[in-house]
Length: 493
Image (cartoon, rainbow, N blue to C red; front, side):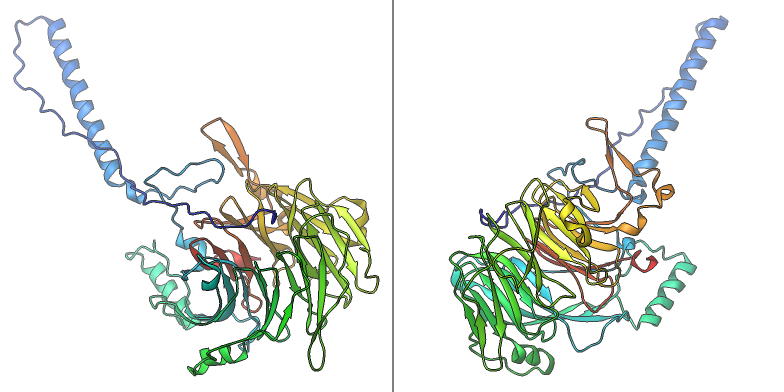
């Protein structure tokens, strides 16, 4: 996928008119029908005509009433790959489907971002939320690119738009919920940020889990930078001035081409792997005084390395995927060749994610819109545990939920972000009516039972992550900016 530059395409959505049918006023009924004679047949015809006219008036009155109440009808679920947006239509979301939903725009689109581990604690559920994250831009010119260091605060619970003000019980429940969460959902979310000038567009950005102020960026200028943003984060909390000029603490200049694959080890502090479009992987390690990048690359892929993931349990093990359609497992002690390899898909493999809760499970996403779950204990069989082909565009990002071992989140080029829950696989009785009729060609769009949630409304979604410390909160980046959301059904799992 990365042989061609991943750029954002400007696709406009316009406002939905939402207008009902127009009805003309009824023609005034003529009165005083003159009886020419007392013939019963003539009288009967006149009575029938009068009844038909009265019926027409009733039907027109009903139509007018229905038109007036059209805005109160249930919202229609838009089906990607089935329904089409008219020129005067735009997607809108149902607030009752979300516990929290916030949108954020920045100066330039961000291809990649990463939420940071912070000092506020894990497993926090009380609103309003605060979070930190870093992102890299794709500006109009290389010199205008930046690393954004952001603090998002006052992320309140979303206030339902459709609560009936006359429904006293609904109002009371909403007020009690806000009191329990210490939340005032009418307040606006707040964004404060600092930035670092960056040479070239940021293809990918990742923060170290153990020391979140250490981040790495893959630049389009073929270099990987390592940065210390400690003072930038500090200034967001105490309103002090950030450094005027920030230089990278290390530069990986071994790559002969740009790349997208980048990951920090969660087992070894300061160990970074980077893969490029020339099919090479390099490992960089922190020492007591400096950083050192191995001179010899890891070779084995025959095409661009698209993504890298370190093992969540083994110090020396990492995985990679490539446009050569394979996923490979590497052991740094072997160095020269992969320890295992499978042809994972029939098209480019764009992304992988290694489960931290079930450490023998990995998921891969492909250019053909499919994603597959792999059991690494039987990895050489070339047989995935599960194979899903729902999305109509390339899989651009995929990640296991750190708070729910059976869930993953997926973003795709079809402008959808989906959440999948594999624990629903056996609950087939709940999903008897999951087919959606396509009125255009009378075919059914089948929703798999594991499809837990669909989030839409963004154009050209590039990356999605779960927040590592706020359960079930997801963040996605697209051409227009960021969405931060939590589904209303997430606590049911």
